[in-house]
Length: 357
Image (cartoon, rainbow, N blue to C red; front, side):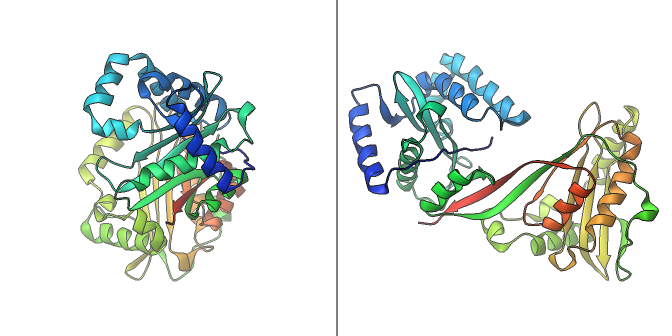
């Protein structure tokens, strides 16, 4: 679910004073900053998120919002989660800002996994009529102070690339950008003339990937060279992620053929014995969009994207009634430009930011 923040003008000193005062008075009054109480706040938080992110919620965000509303009505289950499950307590932790008996601000603060030392800040939202009052900054201060009470390894958050106000706030709080993801969608696959596509460089060759340990290891090495080291420190690459199960894939392809879909394809481009690019094609079935996953070695960017993406579109053309949805590293601009040249539309780019203490 994307995040948002709206412009604040308060100085840091004034905000800190205001936050402390709000915490003090919220113990006895129903306004200002206070810890979120899941048993009574979830419905108000859901209303706020729907208002603040009305134009940003994708299908998964809408689904998460429905689950949040459903949970707000299941008080016995919610009570059990809050009282007896520390994992869910982490998931439901955070702060709200209340004015006029209404939740007008929210921040969610939780671990990325049970017992993890990595924490995530999300759902930084302020109601439209209450923006510009320093509420979002106050929520951020409270969230950071909460996390610092634990043996934290890192604090991260996600923000839209075009949300300049939010990025300015987070940068002022010592968050810095570490990576980004661009989401692209193609509604209908165009007909591509493969003869008109630029050829691959003569020193490389394109082939189908083998379902063995050698190719799995090469795919891992390519990913290690393509993903920035700082990103890998936050989200380490696991070799098991690059293994393919031939039997499982055969069963998946058989099912796709039964329902009139296409078979998955795994292509590699190699220079000698080393992979310089991989392209995984996952045809959608039963109304689901096709998916592409492209990785290109930094030394070969700008040379392989157009011939590979063009060939992938030609491969998927027999099932052109379904669109293509994909996400791609924002720093791989050569691929994003090629996707757009073929008619893909960018829905959003989300930036990951990490807190530097």
